[in-house]
Length: 57
Image (cartoon, rainbow, N blue to C red; front, side, top):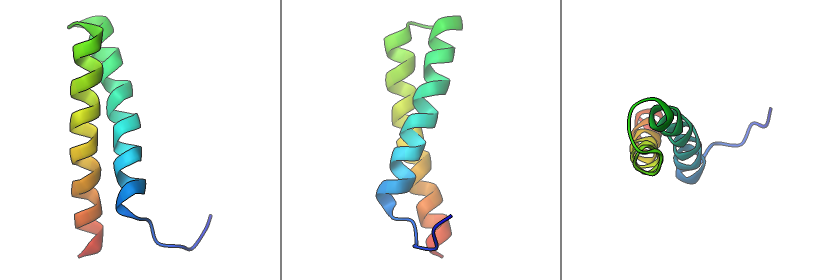
């Protein structure tokens, strides 16, 4: 693993990918798949920003 510090973009992209994956699964099971993907990506981006702010402290 590299020792360079992670940037805001790293956390945001990671959150978007993970949130989108969860959103697609929810879309397959409960709601429309496009809505699940969008909401998952949105929530994932916000979660990534929150984790970045938490790590910065």
